[in-house]
Length: 102
Picture 1 (spheres, rainbow, N blue to C red):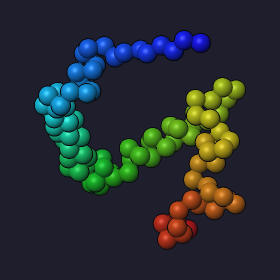
Picture 2: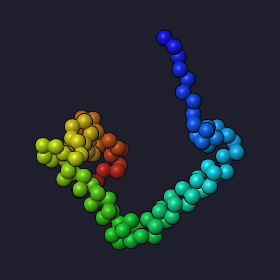
Picture 3: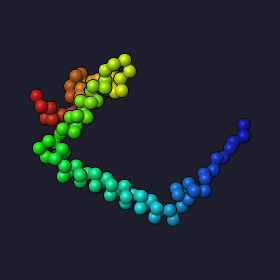
Picture 4: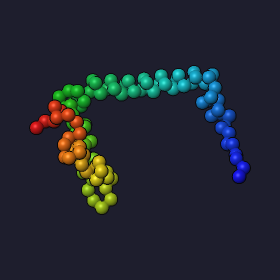
């Protein structure tokens, strides 16, 4: 059986193998880092995340996920992890008990 070598396109070879393309990747990384920091800062100063209404976004997300576990073809699968959300092995929480509000 003959072996075949599939070569990269010249553009991808230059982007991923040439050190001169590092400046492009630097700009991409700086932009992604800036967007990530700005999104985090918006959460820090937002009333929905750290103010008087803290936790409402996470609660809405969790409740929406749990309502999607029902039906013949659920959007969120149940069983191994989905339907037993928040339960670890033997019915215990998957995190230390100091975090459990009992």
